[in-house]
Length: 232
Length: 224
Image (cartoon, rainbow over all chains, first blue to last red; front, side, top):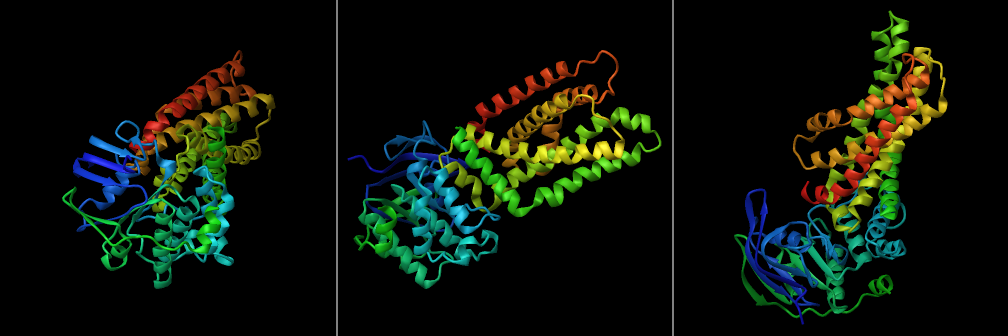
């Protein structure tokens, strides 16, 4: 079976700087892969290349069966990226942001309310403009979008950053749940104590290449009831 | 494509409705420009009347720069542009949606400035149909060219200062066509000026800008 992500000697540039310098990486369907490495190692660039936001100029880059070297937009609707930024509009309310994100991704906005409830973004908070939210609350809104979209491939860049303890636990549960449903998850994180227990494989990134891939703790979690409702 | 355009356009307008930037900043700026023109030409009412159409469209043009800059400013915050790219929306739909939102804002401004011209400059309307159709065509032309060049400038560090330099030469035909058509409609043009012919020129450029934007936007969205 073809891997969900298959990079071979993948090279990408940010300006003139080679942020990916020949990445080799296979990620199988349903796996949770942790990317770890120092700042500037290339973890975020791998995620952005897999999402089709960073153009791979040479080598092979296949994601969900599509060749991103030929068409970097091919798989975007099947991918969810939780990046350093929230991707939200400051002047829109929480609920409006989630509904717009769902509708623009071709997903029914009916899923929004369940996701917002799961992330605790209900009541007055649902109508609050995003500009008034804390960094952690913004993170939860972005996570609500990802959860409601429930894409085939989850790309999470430092997903625990800014979240309080309860929502970190919730995030871990959502990742386990996604993997148990056959979703593939790639996490870039410095927080080994949080992210490693989730990982089926751990890839070490340095200097724009993957230098080692090792097995991680098995990842098969129970399905939270909220998630079952949303994806039903 | 049109579904995506309506989605993006309604989102942009909802943001404007909530933030009120157009009503509290762009509209007062446009009126201020018109009033200052009035002060500058106050000694010569005849000249003011003759120049009214040009002054109106220069005020609209300057305001459209603010509207276009605002249209991209909302995408620049907190990675919103990446989200838009990741959504898989049709780039032509994004272009048309953003254009439609700017058109709506410009039409509101033009109504406001139209009252201003009548009240401040003492203008009489001779051909309202030509006025209205010219406003529609010129608004679409300005918004389409602005949205296209706004995306070119969007990824650049110096976008705020570069955008007017890029847009103003390109929209000169819109300014010329709209001004001449309006002069005919206001009865301030010289004898023999056919406003509807100028409108045809204006519509031709508008069609070119809309077509170019729809085709080029997919590349610009990825490269900016």
